[in-house]
Image 1 (cartoon, rainbow, N blue to C red):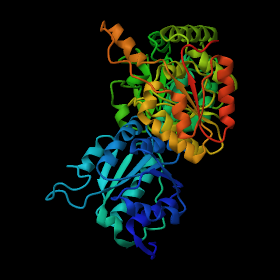
Image 2: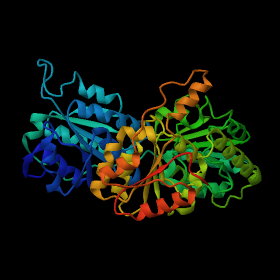
Image 3: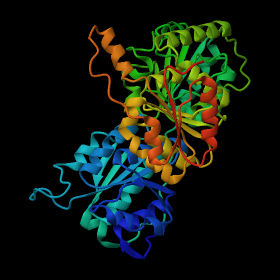
Image 4: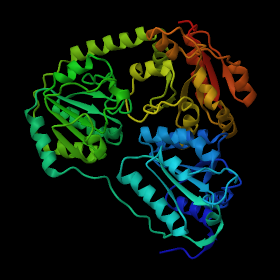
Length: 531
């Protein structure tokens, strides 16, 4: 049934999003997208005004990761869209449900020199998202919006872009159908479930690899581990699916060369909800598996270089539940050695600490003081590279990082979006001095919204990871040092609190106080912080 009330299309789109469950939109208004802003307040949607479209995109990403709901961004033509392409690429890489809606020029084939004109904005956006389409009518806009929302539920979550010509946005139209289409993820074939259950019954050393696609099914993953006695690795995005404290969890150490030997010692390897990406394993294969099963909703993953003996197209959560039910009453005879796993994890942690000395102590300090439900957003910085291996994660979806695309400047705006999404639950962000330069203007948003957000800024005075890479490549380090401001004064200029602890005890106190503050707090740390 279509609503009879006539409004400009831009306003109808906001009302439609509200009807479909969208409560927050991130963006920046401009002369070409003002019609999108006509109906936001009337629809009852909260709008978060970013300082840069890149920030708006990262906020939508962070909101989606925190809430499980789509993160929506409103953008203008041309530079607005281009500015958001980096977060769209990050969202594509990390499977984030981001809906980007922009205006576009009405005609570009026979006119040049228009404000914000691009040769092909739709095609440019398509390079960094799942799909990018132009809606030339109200029905097309409504249909594309519903298509995006349904695909977030039924396919791998990846950003979608819808652009609407300026004149079409302003045209009065009837509203969309009040009936939202629904769907579900694909399910594995019963025959495949039965086969894997039989293989697990016979296995003495089953090994699981849990990826980000199993986060929603962590209860099922833990039940499957228990009934089979299996050991596991987790990818970075899958951390917490199995608690870090589980003695059969090798952790997120897939990139450690010795992990291949452990995987090769298994008589059955089952990888669920993971593309076994380069940024997880840093080698061509996870190891020479005796028998490999892969379960994924993305057919592309099942056809990549990690060819499985049994590739299964289906939702990992439902698959794990079905296999566990099929194994009801099974008495496993697991041969995994918990002592060996503990020894290896300790050795791998030591290797991680040796590669970047003096960093893990900050993670250990955070683990002592942070509430269990704290959500952490980290940036591309050496402190995060260490802590995403060494910091204990007891439940999934608590640590968010720009894993695949690897964009600097992600953490601050993404954490703002996450904090908007979770409300009173604690959120912190960890960012390096150089990455902070990319999006530090979004600190103004956190101040404006009064967000209790500790911002841990790691300043080693340089692009240390790049300097180390140059040294390993026998290149004399160059272009790795930039002039930094006084970050504490800068934060205070924005209206935020700032503190520079000189020891670990002071660091813990600063984070604890920042979690209770009525606005953001920049916590400035350097390698000189004392134990």
